[in-house]
Length: 158
Image 1: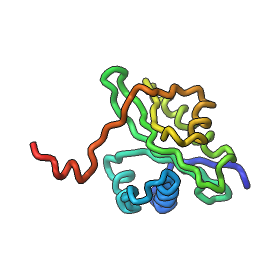
Image 2: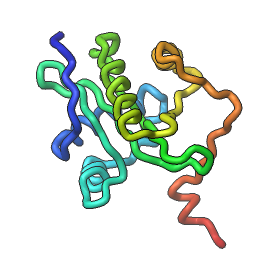
Image 3: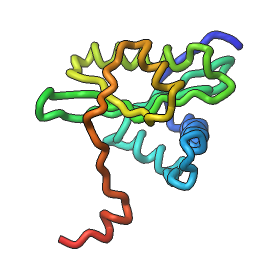
Image 4: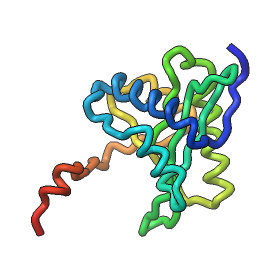
């Protein structure tokens, strides 16, 4: 394999990004939960007010990884970056792709004076946990994830 090259994603990368997201959904044992389409990624990421930023990693001009993140606000800390996903295709894992992507996001967070960079990892995903531990991250066992799904939001009665 050649050197890892990263760059900001463009709309035409969303087909490859979508494929990586689907690969992750299968790995995380929830392929039926992946409902975002390529068109939705293009609209949400490349409209006048994009909902996220995305970078892709390439080896030999083939997209083998991506990171998708957005700015959030903490009432306690101020501006933060939330990393939704770093995904590296299985054949490129262990080649430094994830490290290059996360290093870039750390540089972005520092340059933008973000007060925190945060993300989640499944408690059974030991390869990812070990990868993140190499960066000296805090793994916080005290917080419980909460969410309302699209169907729950639509069914909600005031």
